[in-house]
Image 1 (cartoon, rainbow, N blue to C red):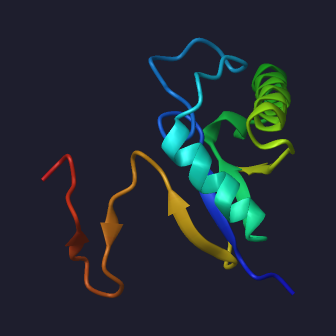
Image 2: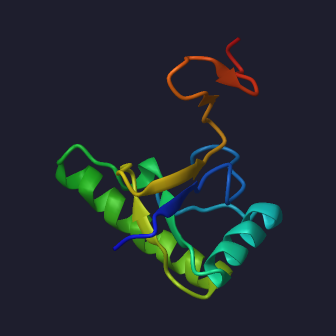
Length: 120
């Protein structure tokens, strides 16, 4: 039975993002966030990389980009965390938290923003 998992965005959250440079380019690690992930992993928490890089529209080119991105992320994770982490672009009912530079938290059942939005 799953204890749940934490999703962590790659670009701009785990790795520095300074513009799209292709599916296999991953920026330098962001120390504070990588340290969090290492702590969660040492505590036995399942962590998944949550990224649009592995999404595709079914065309051969996009599938190839998604596979190449996945391989690059695996290599990056082995270097940063000593292990590969599952990579996904989908939420499920076992998702405990999502850490992402683009998310805006909303209080449950209210629509009220927790913190701030760059659009309001």
